[in-house]
Every structure is written in structure tokens, then in C-alpha cells.
Image 1: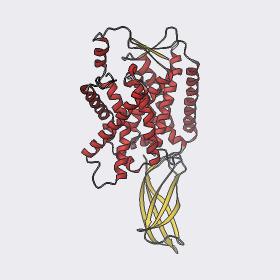
Image 2: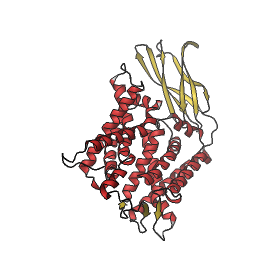
Image 3: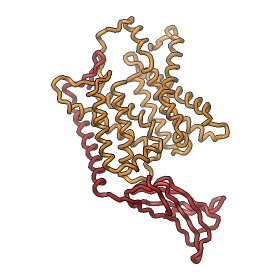
Image 4: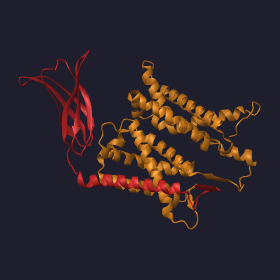
Length: 289
Length: 136
């Protein structure tokens, strides 16, 4: 998608196509959460300072995400901020509409409940809107615009910094985590598991994460420069990626009151089980974004 | 650093030292988590919960006297659907009793709730305890 720099460049069709993609992305990513009972309840009772922190953390996340995956080369920080606000607004509006349409939000509810529910759901929806605008479309438009439909253009080189790779992993982990962290199943699983189950899950998370990015030949998978032993990538990317997935899990659990008054081992076990989907999300983000 | 060329991502052969420091630090933390959980796997092998009830606070509210309680689980085994019984007694006989259910009391953790009595428990004998639970 190109960006209008003057009033004459503004293309109505493209602008509305972008908005539509944003709404589609918000739906794709947020519907599972919009249809989760625990998310409605959390919107009502969760501590307002934790909700505020989540809403504030989402702002820089959207801006960096917009800068990184939004419009790539043509992007400036001003445009990134503008796109982030559009994505946030799209998230809020689509969540409000869907919650009203499903009868979750009713007239007789207090403003405290309604705003809490919409605000909480708007976080995953806005990330979805941002990813939807960049991932669902755009590529075919871009090719036609920039290379005149010349798909075999060999020069498509770009470097992702180390911090950038870690950021992408964090976004991927956050995405899968937000889907499952509010559900009661996560804490129930951690209560059913013994410490030995947790150790198996850690090993499985690391193996799946490494395999996703390096061993399996998915589109977008990563290779090592020639002559580099494979454990290099494990130490430099997979271990930090797993740690990021664990930290994001811990943050989600704390935000959703799943760590209050809980013993430290029990918290660690819940983090481990939640990091399993988080690790897969982190690995998938490196391939897709 | 990762170079993306013709849709292929190639990790740099000579990475920056920050990548190694981050990797090593992450490795240490992950091993720390494994050791911590493994230690509990060996040492903390309780098979049943150990529940103890405690009255935290008594407030006079419009519908009666609200007693906040907490249930502590001293064992590493989690109890679910924990039935809580609160009783006000005077000279051995039960004046009033109230019940509630807590979803979970996880191992080495606390959970709490409230019971609402019609009679004032202050100056009388008040006891809150768990009477039943199921395994999660």
C-alpha cells in the first residue's frame, strides 16, 4: 500500500481497502478472545491500574510494529504513529460493535463495565488490525506499483537487526499468549502437571521453536551462514526467544490476576505451560513477519 | 543479525557480541528455571493438600457482618472446589453457619473469600475452615 504525501495523491479506494483490511485483521485475531467468557469477566473486574498499563504498553508496541511490518521502506515515525492510532481506533470500534452485536454489552450495564470490556479486547484487536493491514494484503499491490508487475526482480534484500528479531518474537508470543492466558484451562493445566511434566514441556517448547525456524523447510525459514555450527543459532536466537516467551507469559498472567497469592513454583509452572503456545507464536512470527 | 535475501533468511556468520551475551544470559535463566522446577520434583512430593483457614477482617455492611477469610495450602498439592464452612459459636452451640466454595487453592498458595453473617461475630467464637475439596 502506498502512502499519500499530498492531497492530490490521496486514493480513496486504497484508503478504504486499508481500513477494511484492518477490520478483517482485527476480526481474525480478536474473535477467539471476543468469544471467551473470561475476557468479558476480566474486563469487568480486573485491576484498573493493570488494565491502564496494558493499554499504555500497547501504544509503543503498535508504533514499532507499524514501523517494522507496516509499510517497510517508505515509513517514517510520523506515519508509523498515524497508522498505530488508526489500528488502535479500528480495534476499539470493531470490538465495541461485535460485543454489542453478540449481546455481551447491554444498555443496563454501567460505563465502568462497558469501557473495561472494550478496552481489554481492543488490545489484541488493534495488533490484529495492524498485522491485517500489512499481512493480509498489500504485497500484490506493492509489486505492481513498485516493480511494474516484475515479480522476478532479484534484488529484495533487507537486514533485520538482532533487537528487531527479538521484537518480532515478542509480538508473536504475545499474540498466542493473549488468546489462552485469560482462560481457566491454563491454571488448571498447571495444577494437573507435576514438575516433571513441566520439564518435558520446556524441552518440547525449545525443540519445536528451533525446529520451526531452522529445521523444517517452511517458506521464510532461516539458514545459517556457511561454516557456522547449528548450536550458534540455538544460543543466539532460540534461547533468548524462549526467555522472551516466558517473560511475556509472566506479564500476561500477572495482568489477568493469575499470579495473585500463588506460590513461586506454581507460578513458574503456569508460565512454562503458557510459554508453550508462546514459543510457537514467537517462532511463527520470525517466519511470517 | 539476519539478512533477508530472495525470501531466504540467513543468520550472520560473525554476530555481534551482544547476541552471545543475550544468548548466554537467557541460557542461564532457562537452566535456573529447570533447576528450580526439578528441585521441587525431587523434594516437594506431597500427595494431598494441607488447608488451614484464617479470619482476615470483619466489617459491618448493610446486609450483615461480612467476614473476609483466607485459606492457606501448606502442601504442594492443589485443591479444587474447596468447600468453606464458617460458624459463630457461643458456649459450645452453633448460633449461625455460612458456606461458600473456592474454585482453587493452589499448592503453597493462598485463596480467599467472604461470608456474610446476620449476627455480630465480635466477642463470640468464630471459626472458618475447609470441609471438603476435590482434586483438580
